[in-house]
Image (tube, rainbow, N blue to C red):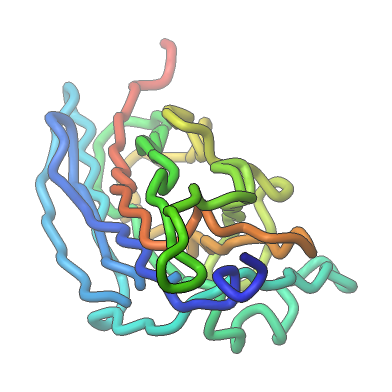
Amino acid sequence: MESENKKKVALTVIGAATLLVAMIGATFAYFSATSTTTTQTITTSNLNLTVAYNGDDANVKNIKPTTWVDDSDGQVATENTTNTDIVKFPFKVTGTSSTAGTYKINMQTSITLNSSTVVEEQGQAGVPLTGGDVSDIKYRLYKANGTPLGDEQSFEATTNTDIITNGVISADAALNDEYVLYVYIKNSGAAQNKLQGINFTITLGGSASQAAA
């Protein structure tokens, strides 16, 4: 069974439009990838906000459990940005407004573990994959300049969380905030076979609020 943990599998992360704003997406393989981009705009009073994928078409192959290198200087470590087992998902929030306000970026996904069975030797009955949990799939959010926005977070079977809660919209000023979402499988040092071949969708949506008078 240990050998199964070393097999390459496919993890898919794709975007789907939300009712509010843009959805951004990409496909990743545990792990191949093709990206799609959909951009819509929502206007709230005099505020408008657009969220858009901010990278080239993703083509990431052979992603597998890996180790995140801890920051030593308050910036994302170079080893993380060059690690092909860590998916880099850049996005930007843009807009213009005649009034001040704030914006939120919400992330949603639903993940189901692989419940397949495998046959280790010919003639042997199938046995279920073992090891690995949804919480082994991690994410970190950074500004495009490498500044961290919070600590490592875990996905859940159903994740619905605001990854940005108080983005600033200034009156009569262009909004152009750029971020990078890093997604990876944290190597637990044990079998993580139930993560093989799973598919899930990450959806990013945004909303804007006018500042209180």
